[in-house]
Every structure is written in C-alpha cells, then in structure tokens.
Length: 512
Image (cartoon, rainbow, N blue to C red):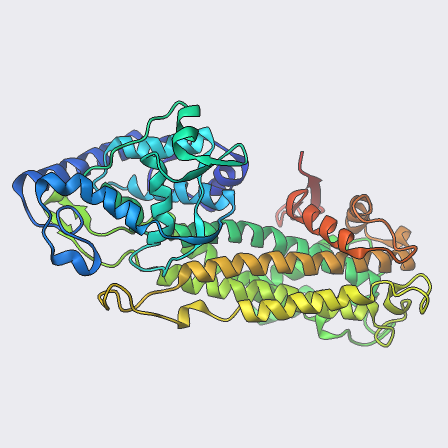
C-alpha cells in the first residue's frame, strides 16, 4: 500500500502502482491541506472576489465574470467542452498513471478541491477503473487540457472507462465498483484539467520501459560480443575512468560482469587488434543514453510531485496567483531527449546485427543461414531492423521546436510535450523490436561458436531465450519469432544488475 502525500512519489513507487496494481492510501496531513484549500475557495465565492477559474471564464474568456448561481455549471461546461481528444486511447497503464499523478498533485493542497474528489480518484486506482483517454489533442500548455478532461468526465459519470480490460461507459463502471459520480463545484473542473499529467504519465511509463530496455540492451550486446568473438580490452576500467562519465563506467562494468567466464570473447591482438565501433564503443554510446535517462528521471520525479494547475491558492486563500506551472516545457524537453537516447540504443544495435549477418564483416555463415543460397536465413531481419531505425529517426525530431498559438493568441507559446512523450513511447517499442532481432541473430551466432564456451550469465540467458525462439535450422516465417522475442523482452524478462558492493554475478528472473 503506497501512501500519497503530494510530495514524495518516486518512479519506483509509480511502477508498483501503475504496472503492478499496488493500492494507494491518502495521507491525513495531505487531506488536511486539501480541506484548508477548499475552505479558501468557498471564502472567495462567498466574498464575491473575482478569481480566474472560480468565477470567470477560461483562456481568452478570463475577463468574463460568471454569476454565483452559474459557478457549478461553469465547471461542467468546462469538462464537456474540453473533452475533445482524438485518436486511439492511451495504454491502460498510462491512463492509470494519469489518475495517480493528478491525484498526487491535488494532494499538495494548492488547488481548492474537496476531499471527495481526491477520494474518488484514489478509489479509481484501487478498484482498477481507468479512464479511456484519447492520445491526440493536447498542446502541452494550459495543461494537458483535452486528455485530462476525458479523465475528469469519469468523475461525473460521463465518458468511458477500462474495466477488466474491456471498455464500458463510466457510469456503469462506477456502479459496478460501488462508486458514485460527483457534481463538480467551484474550481474543481479547472483543478482537474490544468496540469501536465498526460505528458508526465506517458513519460513515466516510457521511462520505466526504457530503463528496463537499457539493461537488456547490455545483456543482448554481451551475447553479440560472444557471437563475434569481441575484444574485452575495450571494457577495461582504466579506459572509462580516464574519461570520467559514471554512466559509461557503469556500462563497461556491467558488460565485464555479464561476460565473466566466457571463452568466446578475445583479447586485443588475439584475433584482431580492434573491434568496430558498434562493439568497442558500447560503453560510450550506451553510457551517453544512460546520462540522458538519468536527466529524465530527475525531471519526472520533480514533475510527479509538482503543483501544475492555475490559479494556485496560498496562505489559506489570501494569496491567489495566476501563473504558468501548467506549461509542459521541462517534460517536453526531457521527452525529446529520451527519444534521442532510446533511438541510439536501436541505431547501434542495428549495426551489430549487420556485423552478425554480413559475411564480409565476420567469419560466421552468410546471414547466419543453415544453407547459404538455398536459404536466406536472417537476411531480411536486418532489413526490418534498418526500417525500424529509420522510422525512429523521424520520430526523434524534437516536438518542442514547434509551437502554434491557441485561445485567440492568449496562449501564444505551447510545449507540444504530450506529442514528444507519445513519440518517445513509439521509439521505445521500435527499439525493443530491433534488440529482439539482434538477440535472435546473436543466439544463432553463439550456437555456431559453441554454447559450452559461453559465460555463465549469457548461457543462462541463452537457455531462457531458446524457449522463446528456436534455432534457425530452416527458413521459416521469422515475423513470429521477432514478435515473440519482443513480447518476452517486454513482459517476461527482468534484469537484475550486479551489485557494485557485492560484485555478485548479474541475475535474471522471469516474471511469475
């Protein structure tokens, strides 16, 4: 059970809640802050003070004063009118993360909602009722207005929800879970949709997958090192300490750990003096991507605990400030950076695939074919990897360099951060497929070399992976192999890296 405070949510906790279904409980201190903030809103309404979003219109309509009797209707109109997302829905894990992050932000006590709103959001998480939220339609400033409006619809018994993997109307989903919809009151609709939780939620899920894929890339690259009889000297600690990047040094250390005991890898001068960059520079290239991921992690954990709606209420409502915390630029840039980092894992992997299949670059059978000429072997798998890498290059174009003004030019600079997060997720899926292809080719290569010579860690991985994709003994429809390996890497394989202190061998385990 995770305790939400609005201040201390971590990515590890988010992983447990969003991907493993852990339940949440709301901190009493946080609920007290929420209550005080709500009292401030009620005071503003009673005193008839003019405050944006409480008794005014929105965006360009911010100068339009709303009558007291219309304040509740204003919130309903806001949610309905802004729920204009389009396209396929976000994955259910992203929807769940969106509910979590919006709830956590509201618990900071700056937004003026009732505790009932927070409690219903928590109930959605604990009952497994997740809004169906279209992926397209957010500019990533003024908050993720369209996506979060689809989330807010569920609280009022409108829109759609995922229920046990099926899509149903929210009223039915709430009733089945024993929950009642709310009537949103002053400020609550705006508090629910003014924020960066769509891009941040998509970013959280993307990061969690990226982190796992980064570790898997080192394991697969180690397999390729054995298949190509790579030179271990390139991972000597002195080289990496001389440059000074801790992530680069860590990649080299993990590669050395994984390959401990291998009789397939070589020393410089034994077979050749130097390897190609796609082998020799694994720590440098992968390490740079890990640097980017570390930056992304820092920004996500700040944003996960940030107050991002507008206006914010301070000093028990004495200070109400309209600002721009809803602007998604910090996460937008982080997502664009993660796109590049993950695309590079795929780019260097595809070059290793080429070395595994190209007879001019190794002494392995051409295209790893069991009968070169009669059978094409892995020839077109490299084509597929090249296509995915090329697609990643297009997706990696930064979304943040674009901005289109909105709301009659009142909102004249936007982040496009949700687009960046969506494209980042797509790049990660493509990169996993490229690594799956490298894995299939590397499995075949080490089989030619002699699996009895493999390192204990890679041999263990080989035995697991061969249950997913059998050896290439005859040409077959390899599309199924790629999909099976991709799915296994995503759902079934969890990498536990070596402990620096204990120096113990890296261990892998299959999910239950």
